[in-house]
Length: 281
Image 1 (tube, rainbow, N blue to C red):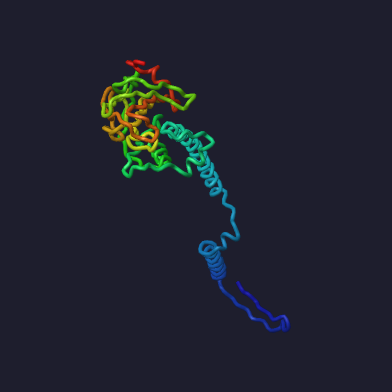
Image 2: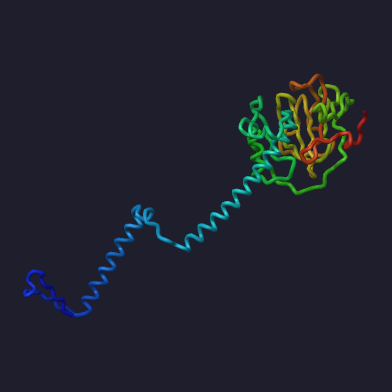
């Protein structure tokens, strides 16, 4: 193959270059490789790829699937957050805060702090929940979660046992925000677990003093308030009739030595007199 070069102003004078065909093909191929390498380097190592986006159907399909999966996870997390907020309100109402669902945002932003410096925390909740949800509920209460060993489900032991020696001075009256029984007794008398379960709170609250909360299978929770001392730590497994505290007069709302006893079912307070075996009014 011969290439002839001629000047425009003087076509009579020309130059010619002769070379085998494979030389010309090799030169063209190397030129293409060099140009392709330069373009690859520009797109791979400079911001040019962001300025000139190239279509990539396979990559777009992959990112679309990832976005759909991420959206589904976000929706599931939002549903779980709403459920935890509702449960947090119910549990904090049980501790005496008397919140309403409309107070949920304030409750999340300003969780209460327990006055006692070394508080024991909630390690599980009344309703069966995943460990991560339990930890979040504990953080909503402004406490440090403690590990709890998972236990197999068991049958709830109800009716409940009368929790201490004494006599009932005030009954269940939800119309006046009194969701349990006041049982007057001797200071220092033993307080017993009303049914089999696990201690999910054992510590101090400003209004109710030294308080024990026990979670039972079947969605039941029992509360023992105004104690003088606590005998069981968080996460302890207890049986019906086992001593968990001593009767006292602690907390701002106490008016004398007595036990305030409550039973909740699925986050709603119920009349304890409908569950107690040996109630004597």
